[in-house]
Image 1 (tube, rainbow, N blue to C red):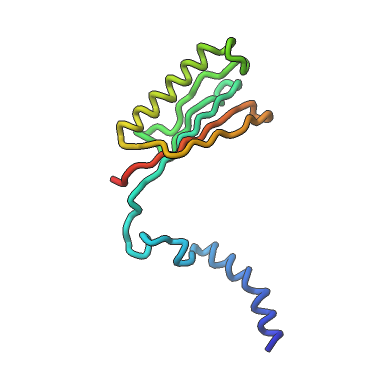
Image 2 (cartoon, one colour):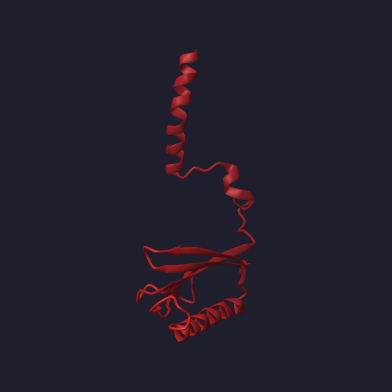
Length: 136
């Protein structure tokens, strides 16, 4: 009998992986709304602002898309000195503020902000804004 239980213990990770690949989830992971067939009361959105010196890399990303827009390009910085990029910095802040205002008008609220550290390989800073609103 001990050999059988040892064999079962060795097989459990494989069975768990198979269930995961087939889409089976434990009842606790499905949450209280899945069991009752209800939608969660809130929906969420992520707005990511990427500030970069590389042309085409500076942008606002929305997931899911908002009014059929998932990406808005920002102005790239020539350098990260504020004096040399005052105009670009101001324009990018205006675009970010306008996007947040449009989202707020549709009932979205920012509830968390996560700045990411500067990544030398990509020469970019990013800030992630998590938004939520009552499900419609």
